[in-house]
View 1 (cartoon, rainbow, N blue to C red):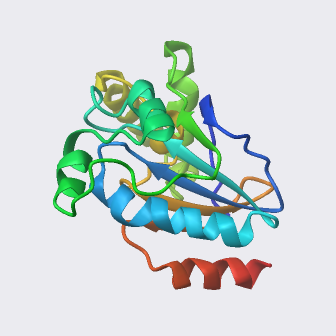
View 2: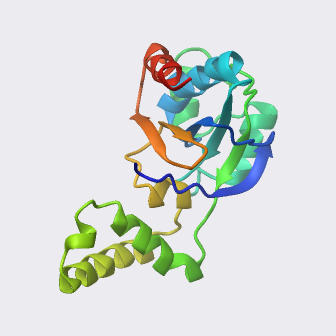
Length: 201
């Protein structure tokens, strides 16, 4: 199975308590789809399954680094403050504040430190199933390519980047060995997630 590389930074709300089965949501505060679909879905799943599953929502950033910040996440959770594209999108529905009160644990995706770059580069490369059978030359070439990519980023959110998630929102179901059981990107129906959860319960 594919490993989940989970890096939890500053805690915003609640405590994540890993269980046999866990559900992770990666979101950005500047992501309208996260607020129109993903966060309400995550809240409903939390209310239904929190006795059996571990839940964690990670506020991350892979773009718009000036908006997808710790401060804006804290203001969102504490005061319902919306920002950026999310604010404009929800205004079209007549909302000027977050319409749900998140009940689940929320934290920041941890930022990469310069000392971690070789470790993270290798983990990203190992996601390629063919990496281990490549020649040393091809491995070194790929390692350098990934490292150069990381160096050029203004900042690196470790969970999002190391797992090479496609975007936000991303839901990830994983076990207590940090193995990914299933992952969804984008707008996913709650019934699809509950069916998958029930298949492992």
